[in-house]
Length: 357
Image (cartoon, rainbow, N blue to C red):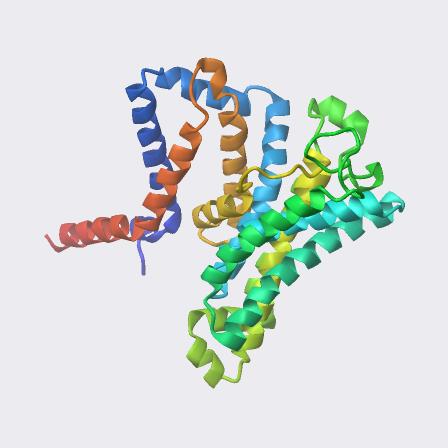
């Protein structure tokens, strides 16, 4: 039987923690080399997240769309496809939720689900088209997703400037979505929490993570999707329709990213602005998924961590530290998670030599 120490050494959690620590150390080196107090910068980062209860609520608000895009990427990883298109799916999810939120007039009990369903359907369709190109023509999904990310980007900017969508008061943004489409918590609760954008997005993200975990781990569909991802040829031999599984996996993955877009616009921004560059939520979802080890429930924790880094990082300018240091830290975390197998091999080999003596 495995000893407790060996189990810890073989655990991916250990190497994720090591990667995060290394990321902060490298971030500290960059701050020090720029003549910025590491203690002041990291102290402000900590205070911005844990200093007040409202900061924790803001962290959850920032984390909500990241959990969804993290789930999107994690689900695709577990089922054998690489969804680098979560960015585009997120954007069309924002777009669909915004259009429905502006043009449809309905009570909140109908309007909110309609916006969420529209966003999920848009994300699923965007991803499904790439799946069709993959299974019918053999076009690699990574190439298609990169192209579709930019198509979504320019499509969104086009729709924002349509007369029925663009705000009449000027500015490169859409009209505000109707109040009946917003997923904000009641005003009394927001006031008590000290967060004007407190919304139900985090609750929806947690529910989605639980559903995806159950789907992957406890259902026949999840077993088939994982089987195709683990060994496509063996899955075909077992009678599983691999093409259908790929399309299903990509559609679910796209729907999750689309929901992340809906949560962002209905819960926080309230309108769609013309993009000057990629939003980044889909690419950040890759980071969330990797930190979580592609575990849907782990995406909740890693999404909160990334949300804390984004919210806390936005306050670093108060101590004259560049907020870009967060990107450096998270980039280093990803690099060291990607090569964590090297650390694992070194530690396990060292342990075997020690036991052999």
